[in-house]
Image (cartoon, rainbow, N blue to C red):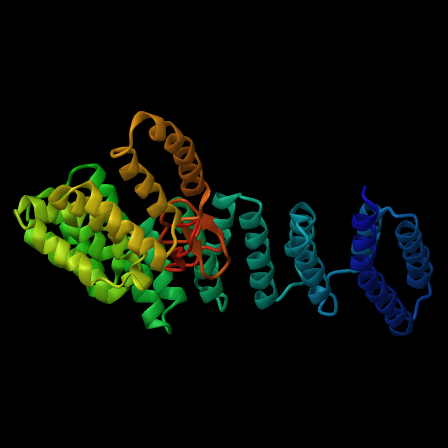
Length: 392
Protein backbone atom coordinates (compact mmCIF):
# COMPACT_ATOMS: atom_id res chain seq x y z
CA UNK A 1 0.00 0.00 0.00
CA UNK A 2 1.22 3.57 -0.65
CA UNK A 3 2.54 5.34 2.44
CA UNK A 4 0.08 8.21 2.01
CA UNK A 5 -2.85 5.76 1.99
CA UNK A 6 -1.68 4.00 5.18
CA UNK A 7 -1.08 7.33 6.91
CA UNK A 8 -4.56 8.52 5.99
CA UNK A 9 -6.15 5.37 7.39
CA UNK A 10 -4.19 5.70 10.61
CA UNK A 11 -5.48 9.23 11.11
CA UNK A 12 -8.97 7.97 10.28
CA UNK A 13 -8.88 5.22 12.90
CA UNK A 14 -7.24 7.21 15.71
CA UNK A 15 -10.55 8.85 16.75
CA UNK A 16 -12.15 5.40 16.80
CA UNK A 17 -9.36 4.10 18.99
CA UNK A 18 -9.83 7.06 21.32
CA UNK A 19 -13.57 6.47 21.45
CA UNK A 20 -13.02 2.79 22.19
CA UNK A 21 -10.67 3.67 25.03
CA UNK A 22 -13.09 6.22 26.46
CA UNK A 23 -16.00 3.78 26.36
CA UNK A 24 -13.92 1.02 27.87
CA UNK A 25 -12.80 3.35 30.65
CA UNK A 26 -16.34 4.57 31.28
CA UNK A 27 -17.70 1.06 31.55
CA UNK A 28 -14.89 0.22 33.93
CA UNK A 29 -16.49 2.49 36.48
CA UNK A 30 -20.07 1.50 35.64
CA UNK A 31 -19.62 -2.27 35.99
CA UNK A 32 -19.11 -3.86 39.34
CA UNK A 33 -17.36 -6.85 37.87
CA UNK A 34 -13.71 -6.52 36.85
CA UNK A 35 -14.03 -9.31 34.30
CA UNK A 36 -15.28 -6.93 31.64
CA UNK A 37 -12.27 -4.63 32.06
CA UNK A 38 -9.93 -7.59 32.03
CA UNK A 39 -11.51 -8.66 28.75
CA UNK A 40 -11.55 -5.24 27.09
CA UNK A 41 -8.09 -3.96 27.94
CA UNK A 42 -6.13 -6.61 25.97
CA UNK A 43 -8.40 -6.12 22.94
CA UNK A 44 -7.95 -2.37 23.09
CA UNK A 45 -4.16 -2.62 23.17
CA UNK A 46 -4.28 -5.21 20.41
CA UNK A 47 -6.12 -2.68 18.24
CA UNK A 48 -3.50 -0.06 18.98
CA UNK A 49 -0.75 -2.48 18.01
CA UNK A 50 -2.45 -3.12 14.69
CA UNK A 51 -2.57 0.63 14.08
CA UNK A 52 1.09 1.06 14.94
CA UNK A 53 2.02 -1.87 12.69
CA UNK A 54 -0.01 -0.37 9.81
CA UNK A 55 -2.61 -3.15 9.71
CA UNK A 56 -5.78 -1.05 9.45
CA UNK A 57 -8.12 -3.90 8.45
CA UNK A 58 -7.38 -5.83 11.60
CA UNK A 59 -7.59 -2.65 13.66
CA UNK A 60 -11.08 -1.99 12.28
CA UNK A 61 -12.27 -5.45 13.33
CA UNK A 62 -10.93 -5.01 16.86
CA UNK A 63 -12.42 -1.56 17.43
CA UNK A 64 -15.78 -2.57 16.00
CA UNK A 65 -15.89 -5.44 18.49
CA UNK A 66 -15.07 -3.04 21.31
CA UNK A 67 -17.66 -0.49 20.17
CA UNK A 68 -20.69 -2.42 21.24
CA UNK A 69 -23.78 -1.03 19.57
CA UNK A 70 -25.74 0.88 22.21
CA UNK A 71 -27.03 4.41 22.62
CA UNK A 72 -23.51 5.65 23.29
CA UNK A 73 -21.86 4.25 20.16
CA UNK A 74 -24.36 4.41 17.30
CA UNK A 75 -23.13 7.85 16.23
CA UNK A 76 -19.52 6.62 16.31
CA UNK A 77 -20.39 3.73 13.99
CA UNK A 78 -22.27 6.04 11.63
CA UNK A 79 -19.43 8.56 11.58
CA UNK A 80 -16.85 5.87 10.91
CA UNK A 81 -18.89 4.41 8.04
CA UNK A 82 -19.40 7.84 6.49
CA UNK A 83 -15.69 8.63 6.72
CA UNK A 84 -14.81 5.46 4.86
CA UNK A 85 -17.42 6.18 2.19
CA UNK A 86 -16.07 9.69 1.62
CA UNK A 87 -12.61 8.21 1.19
CA UNK A 88 -13.94 5.79 -1.44
CA UNK A 89 -13.75 2.76 0.89
CA UNK A 90 -17.38 1.84 0.19
CA UNK A 91 -16.97 -1.87 1.02
CA UNK A 92 -15.82 -0.99 4.52
CA UNK A 93 -18.66 1.51 4.92
CA UNK A 94 -21.18 -1.19 3.91
CA UNK A 95 -19.71 -3.64 6.42
CA UNK A 96 -19.94 -1.12 9.24
CA UNK A 97 -23.51 -0.06 8.45
CA UNK A 98 -24.64 -3.68 7.99
CA UNK A 99 -23.14 -4.52 11.36
CA UNK A 100 -25.08 -1.62 12.83
CA UNK A 101 -28.55 -2.47 11.52
CA UNK A 102 -28.15 -6.11 12.57
CA UNK A 103 -28.28 -5.05 16.24
CA UNK A 104 -31.70 -5.18 17.96
CA UNK A 105 -30.94 -2.34 20.40
CA UNK A 106 -31.45 0.45 17.83
CA UNK A 107 -34.37 2.83 18.16
CA UNK A 108 -36.66 3.35 15.15
CA UNK A 109 -34.91 6.66 14.42
CA UNK A 110 -31.45 5.13 14.62
CA UNK A 111 -32.48 2.20 12.42
CA UNK A 112 -33.92 4.52 9.77
CA UNK A 113 -30.74 6.61 9.79
CA UNK A 114 -28.59 3.50 9.49
CA UNK A 115 -30.69 2.17 6.59
CA UNK A 116 -30.35 5.52 4.81
CA UNK A 117 -26.56 5.44 5.15
CA UNK A 118 -26.44 1.84 3.90
CA UNK A 119 -28.58 2.86 0.92
CA UNK A 120 -26.10 5.64 0.12
CA UNK A 121 -23.27 3.09 0.35
CA UNK A 122 -24.97 0.90 -2.25
CA UNK A 123 -25.75 3.92 -4.43
CA UNK A 124 -22.12 5.05 -4.45
CA UNK A 125 -20.97 1.51 -5.28
CA UNK A 126 -23.34 1.39 -8.28
CA UNK A 127 -25.77 -1.17 -6.82
CA UNK A 128 -28.82 0.88 -7.77
CA UNK A 129 -31.44 -1.83 -7.25
CA UNK A 130 -30.35 -2.44 -3.66
CA UNK A 131 -30.13 1.28 -2.96
CA UNK A 132 -33.61 1.84 -4.41
CA UNK A 133 -35.09 -0.81 -2.11
CA UNK A 134 -33.63 0.85 0.98
CA UNK A 135 -34.72 4.36 -0.03
CA UNK A 136 -38.22 3.23 -1.00
CA UNK A 137 -38.60 1.70 2.45
CA UNK A 138 -37.77 5.06 4.05
CA UNK A 139 -40.47 7.13 2.30
CA UNK A 140 -42.77 6.72 5.32
CA UNK A 141 -40.16 7.81 7.86
CA UNK A 142 -38.67 11.11 9.01
CA UNK A 143 -35.97 10.53 6.36
CA UNK A 144 -38.56 10.75 3.58
CA UNK A 145 -37.12 13.89 1.94
CA UNK A 146 -33.53 12.66 1.91
CA UNK A 147 -34.57 9.25 0.61
CA UNK A 148 -36.59 10.89 -2.17
CA UNK A 149 -33.56 12.97 -3.16
CA UNK A 150 -31.44 9.85 -3.64
CA UNK A 151 -34.26 8.12 -5.50
CA UNK A 152 -34.36 11.06 -7.92
CA UNK A 153 -30.65 10.52 -8.54
CA UNK A 154 -31.27 6.84 -9.29
CA UNK A 155 -34.28 7.39 -11.57
CA UNK A 156 -32.54 10.15 -13.52
CA UNK A 157 -29.59 7.82 -14.12
CA UNK A 158 -32.02 5.12 -15.29
CA UNK A 159 -34.04 7.67 -17.33
CA UNK A 160 -37.21 6.57 -15.55
CA UNK A 161 -38.79 10.02 -15.81
CA UNK A 162 -42.18 9.15 -14.28
CA UNK A 163 -40.64 7.82 -11.06
CA UNK A 164 -38.22 10.73 -11.04
CA UNK A 165 -41.20 13.12 -11.14
CA UNK A 166 -42.89 11.30 -8.27
CA UNK A 167 -39.83 11.55 -6.01
CA UNK A 168 -38.85 15.06 -7.12
CA UNK A 169 -42.23 16.29 -5.87
CA UNK A 170 -41.42 14.83 -2.44
CA UNK A 171 -37.85 16.13 -2.34
CA UNK A 172 -38.46 19.62 -3.78
CA UNK A 173 -41.93 20.31 -2.40
CA UNK A 174 -40.69 23.59 -0.85
CA UNK A 175 -38.65 24.64 -3.90
CA UNK A 176 -41.31 25.23 -6.55
CA UNK A 177 -39.08 26.94 -9.12
CA UNK A 178 -36.45 24.19 -9.06
CA UNK A 179 -39.14 21.48 -9.07
CA UNK A 180 -41.00 22.93 -12.07
CA UNK A 181 -37.82 23.42 -14.08
CA UNK A 182 -36.67 19.86 -13.40
CA UNK A 183 -40.06 18.32 -14.25
CA UNK A 184 -40.16 20.32 -17.49
CA UNK A 185 -36.91 18.59 -18.48
CA UNK A 186 -38.41 15.22 -17.60
CA UNK A 187 -41.35 15.86 -19.95
CA UNK A 188 -38.91 16.98 -22.65
CA UNK A 189 -36.95 13.76 -22.35
CA UNK A 190 -40.19 11.78 -22.56
CA UNK A 191 -41.01 13.77 -25.70
CA UNK A 192 -37.60 12.96 -27.20
CA UNK A 193 -38.26 9.26 -26.64
CA UNK A 194 -41.54 9.58 -28.54
CA UNK A 195 -39.75 11.49 -31.30
CA UNK A 196 -37.67 8.36 -31.79
CA UNK A 197 -40.88 6.35 -32.14
CA UNK A 198 -42.35 8.94 -34.54
CA UNK A 199 -45.31 9.38 -32.17
CA UNK A 200 -45.67 13.12 -32.83
CA UNK A 201 -49.09 13.42 -31.20
CA UNK A 202 -47.68 12.25 -27.86
CA UNK A 203 -44.62 14.46 -28.36
CA UNK A 204 -46.91 17.49 -28.56
CA UNK A 205 -48.80 16.43 -25.41
CA UNK A 206 -45.59 16.07 -23.41
CA UNK A 207 -44.30 19.44 -24.64
CA UNK A 208 -47.53 21.12 -23.54
CA UNK A 209 -47.05 19.61 -20.09
CA UNK A 210 -43.43 20.79 -20.03
CA UNK A 211 -44.42 24.32 -21.07
CA UNK A 212 -46.92 24.48 -18.19
CA UNK A 213 -44.13 23.62 -15.78
CA UNK A 214 -41.58 26.07 -17.19
CA UNK A 215 -42.70 28.64 -19.83
CA UNK A 216 -39.10 29.89 -20.09
CA UNK A 217 -37.52 26.53 -20.92
CA UNK A 218 -35.08 26.63 -23.83
CA UNK A 219 -35.32 22.83 -23.99
CA UNK A 220 -39.07 23.06 -24.64
CA UNK A 221 -38.73 25.77 -27.30
CA UNK A 222 -36.05 23.83 -29.16
CA UNK A 223 -38.11 20.62 -29.24
CA UNK A 224 -41.31 22.44 -30.11
CA UNK A 225 -39.61 24.11 -33.07
CA UNK A 226 -38.34 20.79 -34.36
CA UNK A 227 -41.76 19.21 -33.91
CA UNK A 228 -43.35 21.97 -35.99
CA UNK A 229 -40.67 21.49 -38.64
CA UNK A 230 -41.42 17.77 -38.73
CA UNK A 231 -45.07 18.60 -39.41
CA UNK A 232 -44.06 21.32 -41.93
CA UNK A 233 -45.52 24.13 -39.79
CA UNK A 234 -42.58 26.39 -40.58
CA UNK A 235 -44.04 29.64 -39.29
CA UNK A 236 -44.87 28.00 -35.96
CA UNK A 237 -41.35 26.53 -35.86
CA UNK A 238 -39.81 29.97 -36.36
CA UNK A 239 -41.95 31.39 -33.53
CA UNK A 240 -40.80 28.60 -31.20
CA UNK A 241 -37.14 29.03 -32.11
CA UNK A 242 -37.27 32.81 -31.72
CA UNK A 243 -38.53 32.44 -28.15
CA UNK A 244 -35.04 31.21 -27.29
CA UNK A 245 -33.62 34.65 -28.05
CA UNK A 246 -35.56 36.04 -25.08
CA UNK A 247 -35.24 32.98 -22.86
CA UNK A 248 -31.47 32.68 -23.15
CA UNK A 249 -29.68 34.18 -26.20
CA UNK A 250 -26.64 31.99 -25.53
CA UNK A 251 -28.56 29.07 -27.07
CA UNK A 252 -29.84 30.77 -30.24
CA UNK A 253 -26.86 29.38 -32.15
CA UNK A 254 -28.22 25.87 -31.52
CA UNK A 255 -31.22 26.47 -33.82
CA UNK A 256 -29.97 28.81 -36.54
CA UNK A 257 -29.46 26.04 -39.06
CA UNK A 258 -33.02 24.82 -38.48
CA UNK A 259 -34.31 28.39 -38.73
CA UNK A 260 -32.54 28.85 -42.06
CA UNK A 261 -34.33 25.82 -43.43
CA UNK A 262 -37.70 27.16 -42.21
CA UNK A 263 -37.16 30.56 -43.85
CA UNK A 264 -36.08 28.88 -47.08
CA UNK A 265 -39.18 26.69 -47.12
CA UNK A 266 -41.23 29.88 -46.81
CA UNK A 267 -39.12 31.61 -49.50
CA UNK A 268 -38.09 34.27 -46.97
CA UNK A 269 -34.30 33.95 -47.00
CA UNK A 270 -33.84 37.73 -47.00
CA UNK A 271 -35.91 37.99 -43.82
CA UNK A 272 -33.60 35.46 -42.20
CA UNK A 273 -30.53 37.46 -43.21
CA UNK A 274 -32.06 40.59 -41.68
CA UNK A 275 -32.79 38.64 -38.52
CA UNK A 276 -29.17 37.49 -38.33
CA UNK A 277 -27.93 41.08 -38.75
CA UNK A 278 -29.75 42.21 -35.62
CA UNK A 279 -28.44 39.39 -33.41
CA UNK A 280 -25.64 40.52 -31.01
CA UNK A 281 -22.64 38.21 -31.58
CA UNK A 282 -21.33 39.03 -28.10
CA UNK A 283 -24.28 37.06 -26.67
CA UNK A 284 -25.09 34.49 -29.33
CA UNK A 285 -21.59 33.39 -30.39
CA UNK A 286 -20.40 33.02 -33.96
CA UNK A 287 -22.76 30.45 -35.49
CA UNK A 288 -24.98 33.21 -36.75
CA UNK A 289 -21.96 35.00 -38.31
CA UNK A 290 -21.14 31.85 -40.26
CA UNK A 291 -24.78 31.50 -41.33
CA UNK A 292 -24.66 35.10 -42.54
CA UNK A 293 -21.50 34.43 -44.52
CA UNK A 294 -23.25 31.47 -46.21
CA UNK A 295 -26.21 33.64 -47.22
CA UNK A 296 -23.94 36.44 -48.43
CA UNK A 297 -22.00 33.92 -50.52
CA UNK A 298 -25.26 32.69 -52.08
CA UNK A 299 -26.63 36.18 -52.79
CA UNK A 300 -23.53 38.32 -53.44
CA UNK A 301 -20.69 35.91 -54.17
CA UNK A 302 -17.61 34.51 -52.50
CA UNK A 303 -15.61 37.75 -52.41
CA UNK A 304 -18.37 39.56 -50.50
CA UNK A 305 -18.57 36.70 -48.01
CA UNK A 306 -14.78 36.82 -47.52
CA UNK A 307 -14.83 40.58 -46.86
CA UNK A 308 -17.67 40.14 -44.40
CA UNK A 309 -15.84 37.38 -42.47
CA UNK A 310 -12.55 39.29 -42.37
CA UNK A 311 -14.34 42.26 -40.79
CA UNK A 312 -16.04 40.07 -38.19
CA UNK A 313 -12.83 38.17 -37.34
CA UNK A 314 -11.14 41.48 -36.58
CA UNK A 315 -13.95 42.23 -34.10
CA UNK A 316 -14.27 38.73 -32.63
CA UNK A 317 -11.35 36.34 -33.34
CA UNK A 318 -12.62 32.79 -33.70
CA UNK A 319 -11.13 29.49 -34.90
CA UNK A 320 -14.49 28.48 -36.35
CA UNK A 321 -14.79 31.70 -38.41
CA UNK A 322 -11.17 31.39 -39.50
CA UNK A 323 -11.86 27.84 -40.66
CA UNK A 324 -14.83 29.09 -42.67
CA UNK A 325 -12.69 31.87 -44.16
CA UNK A 326 -10.14 29.31 -45.35
CA UNK A 327 -12.97 27.33 -47.00
CA UNK A 328 -14.08 30.41 -48.92
CA UNK A 329 -10.52 31.33 -49.86
CA UNK A 330 -9.95 27.87 -51.32
CA UNK A 331 -12.70 28.66 -53.84
CA UNK A 332 -10.88 31.73 -55.18
CA UNK A 333 -7.19 30.83 -55.26
CA UNK A 334 -5.20 29.15 -58.02
CA UNK A 335 -3.70 25.70 -57.63
CA UNK A 336 -0.37 27.00 -56.28
CA UNK A 337 -1.93 29.01 -53.44
CA UNK A 338 -4.64 26.43 -52.86
CA UNK A 339 -2.05 23.78 -51.89
CA UNK A 340 -0.67 26.15 -49.22
CA UNK A 341 -4.15 26.97 -47.96
CA UNK A 342 -4.92 23.27 -47.59
CA UNK A 343 -2.07 23.00 -45.09
CA UNK A 344 -3.55 25.92 -43.16
CA UNK A 345 -6.98 24.29 -43.42
CA UNK A 346 -5.71 21.22 -41.57
CA UNK A 347 -4.62 23.48 -38.72
CA UNK A 348 -7.92 25.36 -38.47
CA UNK A 349 -9.86 22.09 -38.58
CA UNK A 350 -7.76 20.79 -35.69
CA UNK A 351 -8.37 23.96 -33.68
CA UNK A 352 -12.12 23.58 -34.15
CA UNK A 353 -11.97 19.86 -33.37
CA UNK A 354 -10.11 20.18 -30.05
CA UNK A 355 -11.95 23.28 -28.84
CA UNK A 356 -14.42 22.96 -25.98
CA UNK A 357 -17.94 23.57 -27.29
CA UNK A 358 -19.87 23.40 -24.01
CA UNK A 359 -18.92 23.78 -20.37
CA UNK A 360 -20.73 23.36 -17.06
CA UNK A 361 -20.79 26.61 -15.12
CA UNK A 362 -21.04 24.70 -11.85
CA UNK A 363 -18.32 22.00 -11.99
CA UNK A 364 -16.36 22.91 -15.13
CA UNK A 365 -17.23 19.73 -17.07
CA UNK A 366 -16.22 20.11 -20.74
CA UNK A 367 -18.34 18.59 -23.51
CA UNK A 368 -18.58 18.44 -27.28
CA UNK A 369 -22.38 18.21 -27.24
CA UNK A 370 -25.16 19.94 -25.35
CA UNK A 371 -26.39 18.26 -22.17
CA UNK A 372 -29.40 19.61 -20.27
CA UNK A 373 -28.13 17.78 -17.18
CA UNK A 374 -24.39 17.94 -16.56
CA UNK A 375 -22.86 14.42 -16.72
CA UNK A 376 -20.33 15.50 -14.09
CA UNK A 377 -22.21 17.20 -11.24
CA UNK A 378 -25.78 16.18 -12.31
CA UNK A 379 -27.05 19.76 -12.08
CA UNK A 380 -29.66 20.87 -14.60
CA UNK A 381 -29.30 23.91 -16.89
CA UNK A 382 -25.65 24.51 -16.01
CA UNK A 383 -24.06 23.39 -19.31
CA UNK A 384 -23.73 26.37 -21.64
CA UNK A 385 -22.08 27.08 -25.02
CA UNK A 386 -18.53 28.32 -24.57
CA UNK A 387 -17.49 31.67 -25.99
CA UNK A 388 -13.83 32.12 -26.96
CA UNK A 389 -11.24 32.06 -29.70
CA UNK A 390 -10.57 28.30 -29.89
CA UNK A 391 -13.99 27.12 -28.72
CA UNK A 392 -15.71 28.98 -31.54
